Amino acid sequence: MTLLLASSNPGKLAEFARLLAPLRLTTPAELGVVLALDETGESYAANATLKARAFAAASGAIALADDSGLEVDALNGTPGVFSARFGGPGLTDAQRCSLLLEKLAALPPRTGRRARFRCCVAAAAPDGRTCTATGVLEGEIATEARGTQGFGYDPVFLLPRLGRTVAELSPAEKDEFSHRARAIRRLRPLLLEVFPELAPGD
Image 1 (spheres, rainbow, N blue to C red):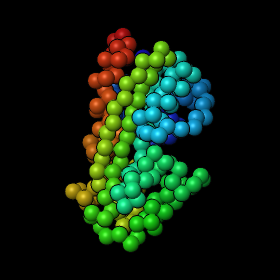
Image 2 (cartoon, rainbow, N blue to C red):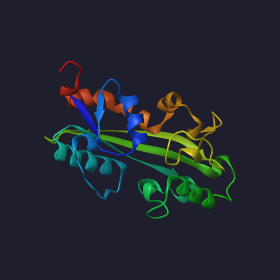
Image 3 (tube, helix red, strand yellow):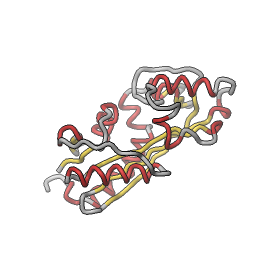
Image 4 (cartoon, rainbow, N blue to C red):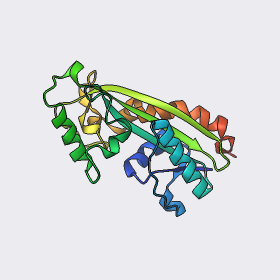
């Protein structure tokens, strides 16, 4: 059995493939599934579950989806579930990072720039079975973008105890610390409990 990752983001596919090994992931393109979904949920869990259920129904496979976002204390927890749409449609990751740095330019490091990444992952089967898990990574917004690894807001998300942004971490380090990694570690035992057909050898 394979898991369908309900995303076309190559960065997410590579990250989830590492985190879920030896489970095999497939993509919507590989299964010929084309869906355009509006993320209308008011929470990460609602959006992740919506996507997982829709892709499971369309493909006949067990689907895995995530919804994640950046919560900045100085911005009252925003952009949150709207992180991918921060600043309006059409912006690149780099442009969203620049906009965030502009909004926080007057704030000092440390407490004034506290933030967290939050991720919810959801798996769903065509018959309606679902499970979810959440992971959180605490940190702060850097004063400038640094690093070339990762995607999204990784270049501006600083881990103070390491003195590096998430974009400066190796893939192995990111798999240890990231919000997605923490969510997947909580999800893995649930996957085999809720979807025993995913167990190796079945």
